[in-house]
Image (cartoon, rainbow, N blue to C red; front, side, top):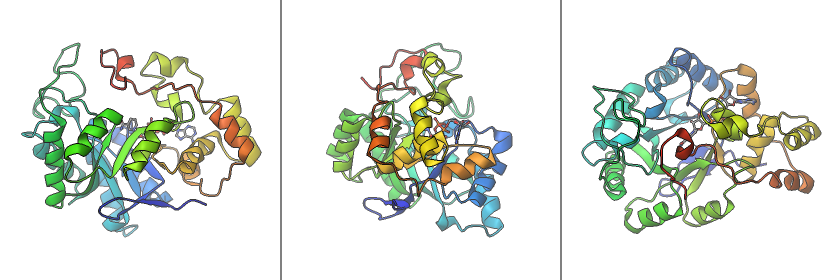
Length: 321
Ligand code: NAD
């Protein structure tokens, strides 16, 4: 049995270990999906400016609160600053827009989505702006240092607009640098983690810095089938014979095996499903217990294949090298 939450540094907030991801939830479905997810028992929601559905996600949260299903303080709402808003002149306005869109008074955790400062795009021109400015075919960097961006996030904590701050897709070098000046340490690092890409060395070091870890893309290539060649060509973890054999042995689904794999490493997980059955089963992972043979089978899947790699989206940014 694993604890159902991770205790965050500084605030001691209890972050639910089983959450719900909001990427790729269509705006027309998002309100109802989030409402149903709360009904099913999810308490952590992982959003982002970039997902383009913060208004609708917020409506789902509001509906559940208004109906008395939960109180705001029962929920743990995470969202992320997009790359085009890293400048010290733009963080606060970007955050304010997200908070207003969500209809909330505070977030529980605000993450820098990528350590990649991109040229500013006015929300009046394009929102969410994505990776490219206008019709450009390549990305345009902005001379905006992460230390200035982080100081703006720290001010959001001071103003009690977000309880915790953190980072996503940062590697060891970027975190090491951030820790040299951070007045408020990151509470969480959110990264891609699954049996193909367990990133044990990074995980161990990050833990030693008292930073908790959220695993995204627990099912490996599944979310990237429509996006990248590697997503298309790589064997799905959900269909992998070894994952399926462990699933059959424990009378659970392959998805549950992959989520339990993450919980065993004390990662929080944030799967998304708009289907009620999967929504339920993705939450029902607390009592699965692997033996040494299962762990050996799952460990043998490691190939270090990464699917959320900007290089494979068609622009030259070897972010994780
Ligand atoms: P996911 O966990 O949502 O899974 C991908 C797809 O698998 C889903 O679209 C769904 O159709 C399917 N699925 C869900 N449960 C299933 C089950 N039990 N059996 C079979 N299929 C199932 O993967 P993801 O979207 O890559 O990641 C989850 C969340 O992580 C996102 O919603 C987002 O919040 C976050 N995320 C963050 C980053 C980042 O850069 N910080 C990147 C990717 C994802």
